[in-house]
Length: 211
Image (cartoon, rainbow, N blue to C red; front, side):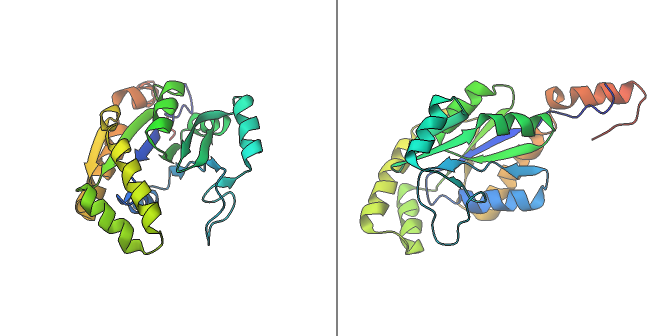
C-alpha cells in the first residue's frame, strides 16, 4: 500500500519512585525524536515548575470522574491518593500516524493499556538495586517528609510484586548500563518483523519506501 507506515509502538516504563525511571525516559526521548510522551490526566495539584498540558493535564476530581463515565481513558488508576489516566482517543490517533508513545505509568495502567492495545504495548519495569538503596535515593532528594518516604517504600514493595506482568526488567544499579538496556529494548521492538512487515512488502512491490 503506497505510503504505508508501520503502526506506532506503545512503550510503558514503570518503576517505584526513586528507581531512576524519569532520568532514563528523558534520555530515551532526547535520543529518539519519534518517541513522543503520553501526557496523562491527573487530579493531583501541579508541583513547582510544572505546566498544565506539558507534564500532566491537571483536572479536578469531578472532571476526572466524568471522563471515566464517558469511557475516555485507555487506562486509569489511583496512585499515592491521586487519579491518573490516559486518553484512549489520543493514543489511537498517535499510533495510527506511525509515531511511538512513551508511558510513565504503573502496573495497573500498563495492564489496562495492554488490554486496550494488545498488539502495540511493550512493558518495561525498572528495578532498583534494593529497597534500602531505593529509600536512600528518596531521602537524598530532600523533598519529602519521613511519612511520605515510608509510604513510597511501602508502595514500592507492592509494585515490585507485579514484575512478572512485564516483558522486560531493567536493573538500574548503574545509570549507563540501565540506559543501554532500555535503549536496546526500544530499538529491538521497533524493528520486529510483525511491526515492519508492511514496509517490507511495500519495498518488494518496487515502490519507493515511505517512512
